[in-house]
Length: 81
Image (cartoon, rainbow, N blue to C red; front, side, top):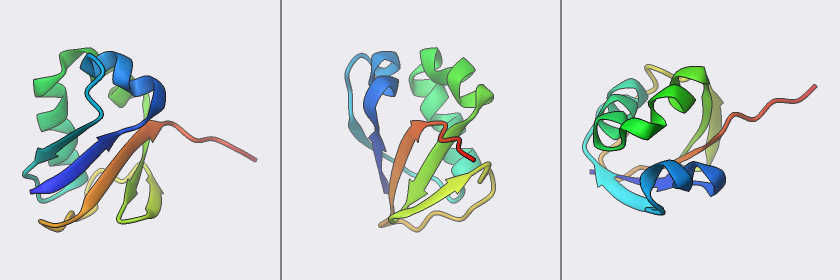
């Protein structure tokens, strides 16, 4: 199962939970399972979040594969120019 870390202000939507394990093959599956567990995250995730998978940051990474030993950090959407 992937280790999922909820970063910063997103913890307000999980009741302060910052880490959990979720079994998922892709980021889309992981995010669906995460919002099923924490429905308050749904709108934020639908609006966009940034993900770091094993240290590599992704934006709009819906179908990126996740390994069973991966660490996935979910962060507020990072934007820049």
